[in-house]
Amino acid sequence: MRVILFLCSLSLLFAHDPHKQGRVLIYPDIPGYITLKADLHQHTVFSDGEVWPTIRVEEALKDGLDAISLTEHLEYQPHKNDIPHPDRNRAFALAVAAAKEKKLIVVNGSEITRRMPPGHSNAVFLSDANKMLIADSVEVFREAKRQGAFVFWNHPHWIGQMKDGTAKLTEVHKALLKERLLDGIEVVNEDSYSDEALQIALDHNLTMMGSSDIHGLIDWQYNVPEGRRPVTLIFATSRTDSAMKEALFARRTVVSFNNTLIGREEILLPLLVRSLTVESAAYSGKTSVLTVKLRNNTSSDLILQNTGDYLFYDNISVLTAPANSVTTLRVKTMQNLASLQLKFTVLSAVTAPKTHPTLVIPVTVKTEK
Ligand SMILES: [Zn+2]
Ligand SMILES: [Zn+2]
View 1: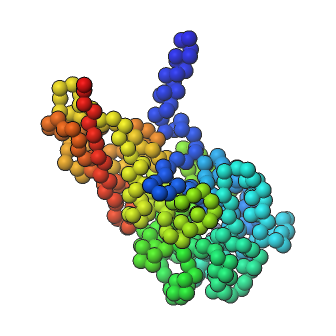
View 2: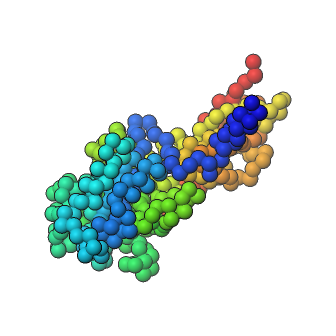
View 3: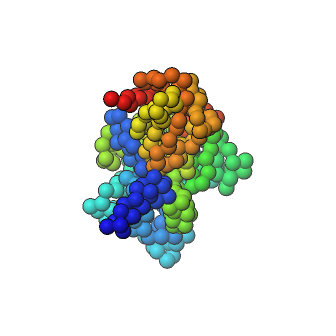
């Protein structure tokens, strides 16, 4: 009996420790949409990656992802002597077979791999990757569009192609945009983030993407479970590939990168509202100090700056609400209130370069009967 009690208290303890939550990525749904966690830029031995496609499916299932794409380089095939594969849809076919009867959407994709400009781009939701073997750097984008693909510019800031690490639109990109051949842009790739790419997304109405671009193992690259891969959160009307595609074209995405959330305010704010919720609020004894328990319902630590009307009893104006945990705040309301609002600037969220959203949290106080 004593052992059982001890185990129970241990599990309660762990329930509040983000490092004991396992590796599954958790983000809440928002009103009207299901939140799909996607990594749509990955490699296997079918281009320059180091694993078989089935490993990518297993990694995704361990991380609790909803969707993946294996975007093999069309033009860079270093393993082709060891693994000849005349069918460029082969990695996709193997992943689909491995994901059969699993809760994982696999979409067909390819990485168009060119010198800058235009650099590298992913086409996902392809019907036939073989038809993408086209030498002309613009015609290959037109083929992607003929197949109804969603196309995004990869790592536009990559120092391998941009020595100053800065994403810039070239004349070639402007021509691609004018012909509506580009739909999205990576603001996060692997372990890097680009403010300039974020600004390009805002200026040209592009979907914000974030992906691992994994070549080796997710666990080794990101030191799982302490670290985790970047993902694109896609807000879809249902858990289907067609709904996901609609959401991508409608630009309903937020990028999760370490503890940073990047997105347009109109979609990031509803996510934050569902991400930080009040568990309880009650005054301590006869004081006017209100104890508020805030639950962070995500896998990201949220860094908050108090911009509301009240000061805190225990905290300075900047505090962290750890991932998947409850944070207790003692709020000096100066008089006993029935309801109030807490207001925070979410410093770990970005809606534009150097711009952070403001989150207002309504609090209803529990009164003693
Ligand atoms: Zn690339
Ligand atoms: Zn890549």
